[in-house]
Length: 308
Ligand SMILES: Nc1ncnc2c1ncn2[C@@H]1O[C@H](COP(=O)(O)OP(=O)(O)O)[C@@H](O)[C@H]1O
Ligand SMILES: [Mg+2]
Image 1 (cartoon, rainbow, N blue to C red):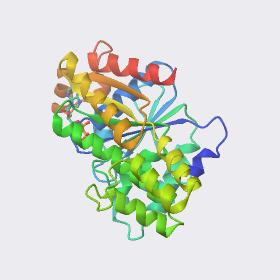
Image 2: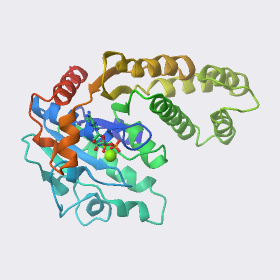
Image 3: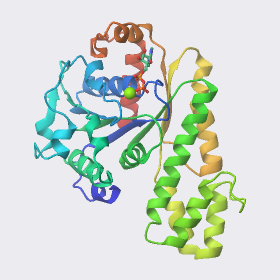
């Protein structure tokens, strides 16, 4: 899936994926805020509801019953993803609605995900933001791993910090497992190392690198490191209430470097904004947030920094 989009022409859109473990941390809210921020900066932006489990982005955007969704692409009702885009009330911002029925298809979904990713990579847009589902299933991780801007959303709570780290660790091992898929003995080693209590005492990616160098040689070990270092997450602590809440992302940055040899692309925080909660509680679209909203202003600044 990743090689598919690496070969595109230079004009392909920047792909963002907003993930990070458990539901309720604000993945959908952050997706929308970043999209609104990009649209404000005159970037032609498309939001894609890639939460195949609980598609609700259209509701948060104030679109009641969309007549087109991702399933129309997967089931070939429409040939192009452009045809299933819905214009939102915001200029420069379109939406591709989600479809829970995709999860119920009988065959493995890798080909369907590939089709979605292929289509996204060809969109006529500056940025495509995928709002991902909760958890660390392959349905989530595979979308996360194709993004140039893979965002991990967390909240300042310790449990959320743990979940966000687990999400990055799972993403690393998913990518390594796919890298090794044509080499059963290597894949077996990766699978074994993924168990944090493995008997071979492989606790870090540096340990795994050493083990692979001894068993499979320098080249394989090097390929492992290159694969890991292509993952450059952006950590966003959402619903921050005080200055020190921003430290949550920094903790993950340090731990990811130490144990996973993963270097983060950015660390930022979005404040808790009572207006966001109020709008959602009243079933009003977040797109109705005034520009003075602190959460929106912060997200817009983060988006600008990340694209400059
Ligand atoms: N920055 C924020 N300020 C205030 N409330 C927020 C913020 N981000 C998220 N929320 C609250 O958290 C809830 C869950 O957010 P949501 O984006 O749906 O989570 P997820 O997509 O991760 O499941 C929202 O309904 C809203 O009440
Ligand atoms: Mg969501």
